[in-house]
Length: 378
Image (tube, rainbow, N blue to C red; front, side):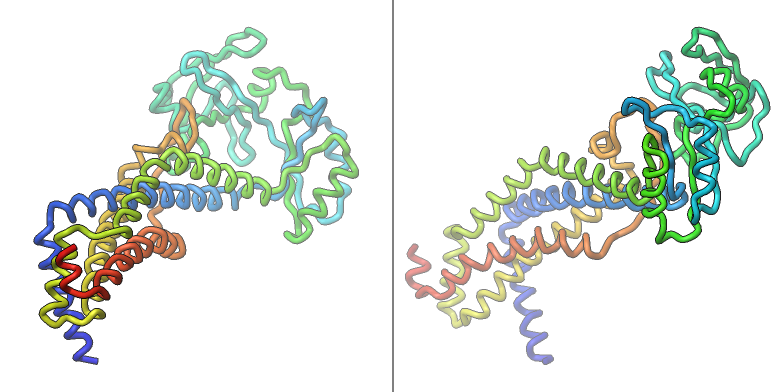
């Protein structure tokens, strides 16, 4: 065992010396390889982090949201809905919600106006999200006037700003008093935007959703698992879109790997012929070239992945952020939780390092099994 390790150490030493003799070519190859790994790893890391963040946030969302549809569009919930839903077995709690969208012509962005269920807000006061603070300048004790869709002007006093830790969900949020909300949107008493349900047995969520559709044909129950599935689909679609846009770089790497597998340079063939002439075995030549390809590929993979990690979790993925996050005026500012998925790392390693190393070994095997004199003359 010690002899084998010592043999591999000597082969690796010779490999590093051989790489140093062609450092310009190898450095260029390493840079191109590292850039490819950087792009692929950045997209994968950011998408996975967004998925994890969405799952973490949506785990606290309602199990069932009930909306009413009229002519295929979302409409207000009438009072009699509550009576019918309250008779369903398995429903642990029912809560009504008041929320709506308001378009601000100043920022050309939509705000989400909402009446909080667990916080008391006095009439004429509002609490705003962090994005409105740094975009519209709405700090504590500042005023803002919003024109309702009826044309009436409403003035509010900002009494607080939501914590920046919640910006992923509350960037464009405006919390207000129920009376102010109903006057602003001209909501009739007893009507609500939607209803959220809590189910006693999580296994019965889908069954209760089916019962709701039977009891109220114009109702649309939205399950939490469906929302999670939708978010996963959106992020997967955007990841695929970005990778399609970057397909040129992937194609360029494929051409590079193919060129590597179809032949060797004259210097490399001469080196192999000399090694065979002085007594190197075919297996030693293949192992030496394997270490050469592996050192380049692994170094590029490690450098590219570390660079992608810094790009995603410390530089906020600034190169490709709008494509994966989406297009909006009020971008939330939030820090993703640094994490590495082992399966994702292994998959990326297999699809980048392994093909390159395999491509290196094919022409080496051909040259190493040829007569040394023929190899040096070719």
